[in-house]
Image (spheres, helix red, strand yellow):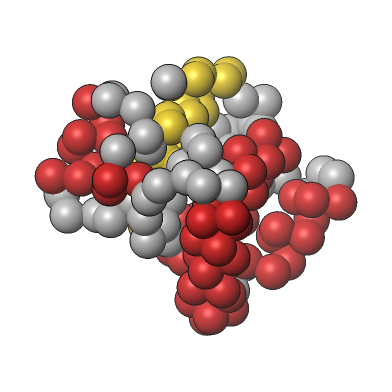
Amino acid sequence: MTDSITSNNGSPSGEDVTIVYDGECPFCQQYTQLLRLRASAGTVHLINARDDDPVVNDVTKRGFDLDQGMIVIIAERFYHGAEAMHVLAMLSTRTGWFNRFNFYVFRSKQVSTILYPLLRTGRNFVLRLLGRTSINTN
């Protein structure tokens, strides 16, 4: 399912932002709902990586493993995993506790690179507990 949100919150160039995330992961769902991008972003498109969507197919053809991380696309540039989290943190507002926390934690590429594998491991563990399959097996 592709959701479009007209942002009042994001991208420095006013480009649209596409986020491909795991729609069956409770953490991923909550993250995309809480994230607020700055007003300079164009439209924010949320795409469930488990859907048969042309963007998901394109991402997969480009060699990105959606089980290893979300994708953020801005102006034909693809950001994956830790880099995607870093980019979203830089584009987010500092309004609200979640967005302030997200910015302060993931504004550093190095910290994002260290923390993202831990977040992914937690995601995989919770998906197993919930009896959900990986994205690539759908």
